[in-house]
Image (tube, rainbow, N blue to C red; front, side):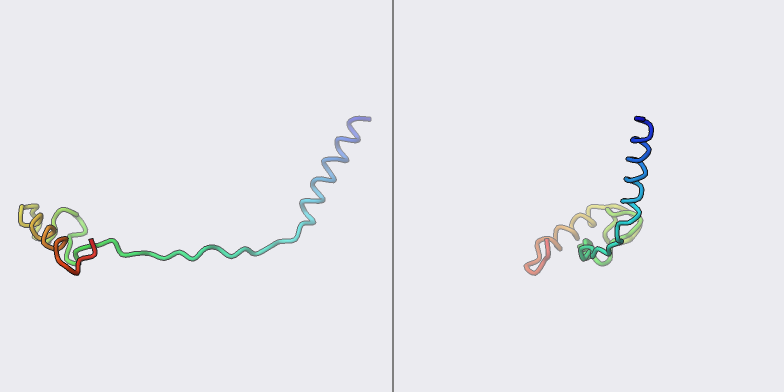
Length: 74
């Protein structure tokens, strides 16, 4: 007798899941923000700011000067 009640319960659960209406839900808007400070940065080596294939003190100086500019974003 318990087996019948269990199978009836399982059948009831399955039928209630099937009869649920499908709803469409809107997702949040996603915006991508630019994170590059220097437009001339080497994409293969982030420390090579002036894209001369060498990481030198000049790269650091360029970045420091960009950060210290009055209209800088950093």
